[in-house]
Length: 329
Image 1 (cartoon, helix red, strand yellow):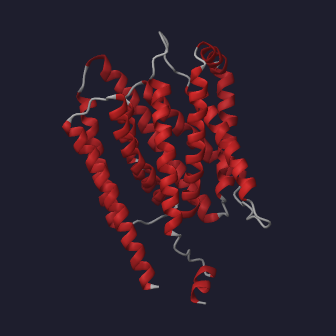
Image 2 (cartoon, rainbow, N blue to C red):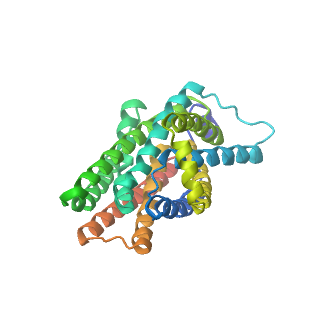
Image 3 (cartoon, rainbow, N blue to C red):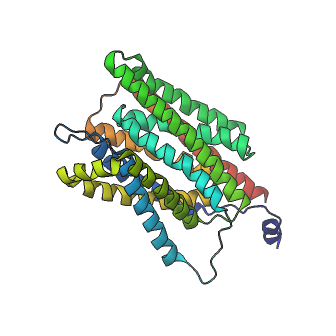
């Protein structure tokens, strides 16, 4: 009876550890495939051409995401589904930062190696935390800030090599870093918006995924028409038809992974989701280095290890803190 009283008074019960593990494995496996294909598509050689069609790539990704979410919702729907009370305007505004982050992140691969993008995006919990505190009025324990600081130090160690390089590559890397900074800022805005939606409205997992991707399709479709990239990509795909199958598999991996991401966001919050996605990025980095033979200095490996240790300690502390909360109940 005490549990029921706590739930009715607004206190949220501890989510299932099993569900969290399923979400982690789903995100990890899906985005491992996603990361491999993303690098393969954007950095492969197409004769004397390069793949520069970021709008088209993200557009196809969002179409598959929306179709997957719609199908999943119809399959998993019950006789008495929970109605999503989130205003469409909130989805429209949240999607602007969501799309912007994806575009900036994908386009940064035109200027920086994939491992650099992966490690730089590992600081995603920082803008999520900062904007969560400022906009969603969330509070985090001191240990959380210390672990995130360790992640930042690791990222600085990893990125120092690129900043120290000169010549023409220096200019390109600067452009990539600016895009990554924009992507991280927009990630923070998206996370803060998702937390606000989750706390103030009944935001269902697949409703969030469907609405976010439908609005994304609208924005990206307008962009493809206004820039002419839609026509240019069509001709590119006719010259290199194998890129279409890669994009479809890439998008399917994204759709499956995104369904787990939205489940994590609506159940456990945006910060937990960002920590899980950051963990999988570390292993994606290792896979990228091994498969595509990216050169890595000892200082960069040290930075990557610091990132992993910070994430592991945060996960261990979070688990221990949950056990203490359960015992105190």
